[in-house]
Length: 429
Image (cartoon, rainbow, N blue to C red; front, side):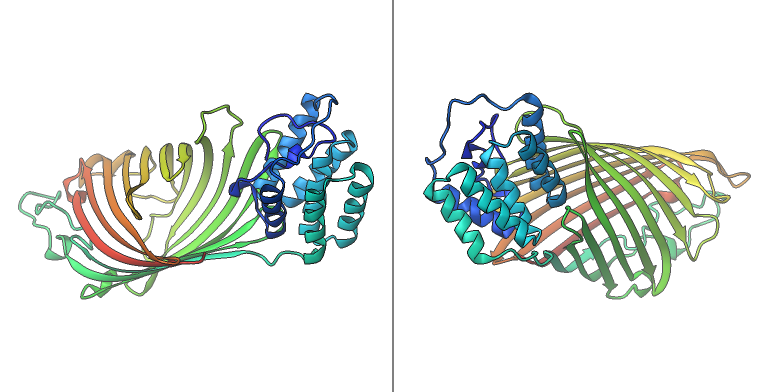
């Protein structure tokens, strides 16, 4: 919320005109009025600057506001006003946060105290009066949604092998059902995100349903739902989440999925636009129509993101360990995954997106002793490119192409795939 150490008894601490800092309607209204009506009205006096401890405390409070953690921000600002009672900006921030939380009496007490202590300039009084006129009602939980309807063509719907010979003998041929099958499909997908509390928590859900024109045995549907909560430990930002999901294949329930994840953003002094995030997760996958394939997977990931103006880039690297619960062919396996994503404006409103995934797995044991005496090694690569054209308010068209190559030392598992699809997307504003 600020770009330097604030001065006591100064309104300069409220100089936040950037949209990314406003997380609630009332706070955004006050800050917008401040930016429009009083760009040069912040008084500075000759008092000493804040101590390093209080400066860090105030920065932590502003970070809590930007992340939607209103209760944490209120607690930190209370500490700030107690240790630095002459810091006018902290008092006003605290009053606006209390108003966001619906604490009417406390908000009015703070406004009255601000008027008595600091004799605010007219521009600040206009903000206070505007807030009083609106009233302090708890904000209705915000809900964001997105729906996408897709028509596409896939070259290898069933992930059919590129080899026609069976590993059980050169004279044994693969059946036609195991060879690649192409089809057109219709896909409906969407997601929903809703505020869960006043401290940055959220609930989310995602669904997807695909219907093939002819290969109905490969129709699929899935639904995932979960919750996420941000936390703060000193200067470290953490986000914990829990996710559960179901997936069906050919009209039958096929998989159950659960995951626990923790993300950490270290307080590093990186160049503008760069952010480093570390995460760790454990997932459980249960197959309902297959025996001996259930597993638990742990992942440790590092991700570097770049966001500036209309450009976005991300590079991540993950170490994976997949533990077989039962006597799965090949036993446990370990591997790694690399993911590259880029997005930028190309021409006028057209947005270009590219993505690349490389994943490698290596099994622990022979895949099928006496039948396939090999330790399975997999190298999976996916290349994606898309053009996005926003053509109406909240709506866009997306043309996407994807190519997959799955290379393994056991030829029967090798396959290639290509997809092309056109999507209409409608999302909340």
